[in-house]
Length: 366
Ligand SMILES: *Cc1c(COP(=O)(O)O)cnc(C)c1O
Image (cartoon, rainbow, N blue to C red; front, side):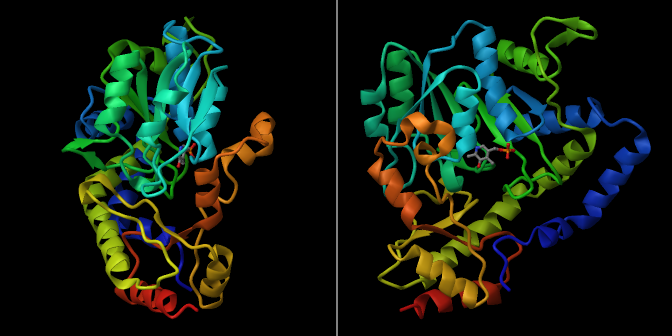
């Protein structure tokens, strides 16, 4: 079977280094808030191009902590609105709700699948405090227009960089383009841990300090509590694994890009819509999304022929039971993407033979 993502093989590809690093931490007797976190945070800041990285338990928490810190800093208050793409993974939206803020959904562009910059301004009200852009599928969602809107209306720009580690906009990494960014190190992400992990990157010293505190019981000093916090930390073993994998991230992303190029050049089937890539630096292909009106048939055909695919995502956030109030609202572009999207196998470890087989099968479909 051609796996959607062979995680065992991904880990194996850096196995020797990972094993040495993990063994060193295991033998050190120090498992939380130590040298490995310090080291990874420094290296990740250098890589992304921000002054600060604050590690935390997972990507959802990273986003939650950004909004929580802004609430603690009186930059936002419950009831304020945050603009977010309607076609994102639910975590982007949960992070807003979790803080008593109100997510305001905006449709994506059907060609890029990213939030449509032309539709943002009409969603702004006197309560809007921030735009949360999501670099969905690994493609940069930022545009100069979004930057201008944030300036014009004095809005915070927050990035959900869970799917886009290493992605660039005009030479700058995503995760450094706005006021703060949330990163996920879920195992399947481009930079994945061997378990859960997350981080916030920012140039804002105060924000970084508040996040470090709220993610550590609200403590600013041992046994002194300034906020009603939680325990959400990155452990030392995950930090060292991430530090090893960070060194290989650019080469791993280059391999993903090479796979994407082969798909784009090789797939020639009029029933398939391929992703349109204008800037190859601005995409790290966390996902290779194709679209077809007969999506479910295609998925079944590929499965019967030994190819595993995934749908990102089958049900849009506004149709989920947890957001009942939105269930009757209509976001036709979002709904179209959710009805037609199919993600093909892509990873740094997929073989040439596997890529060719996927292309052959899709070209022979119908
Ligand atoms: C994975 C993901 C998250 C959540 O990250 P976790 O580490 O799984 O909590 C948030 N946003 C997006 C877009 C994601 O893909």
